[in-house]
Amino acid sequence: MRSKFIEKITRLPQKVQEKVRLKIRKRAIENAKITIILAQKDINTFSEDDLEIIIADEERKVIDKIKSMSIMGILAFFGISIF
Image 1 (cartoon, one colour):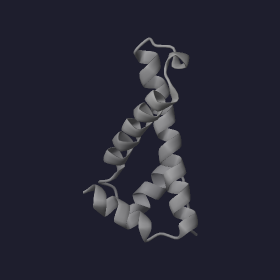
Image 2 (tube, rainbow, N blue to C red):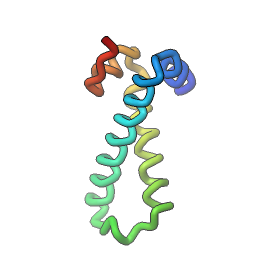
Image 3 (cartoon, one colour):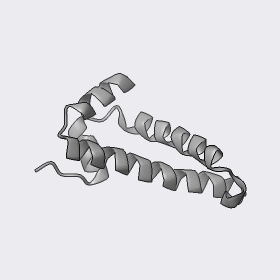
């Protein structure tokens, strides 16, 4: 299913692809911060590699959440317009 999501994104213009990836990344970073806070940990105690792993996991979760949407639904979810 993820490959279909990636396939749909790659059909979009490059500028829109970048916006989608950036929005996913920002959402993942926000979710990672929340996860760290809920775990009662200090973000400064994590190495860059550890933070990257946490963010990558959150990116997967965001993608899993939106991959069942249509491509237009995804763009609307992130507030991106192609027109």
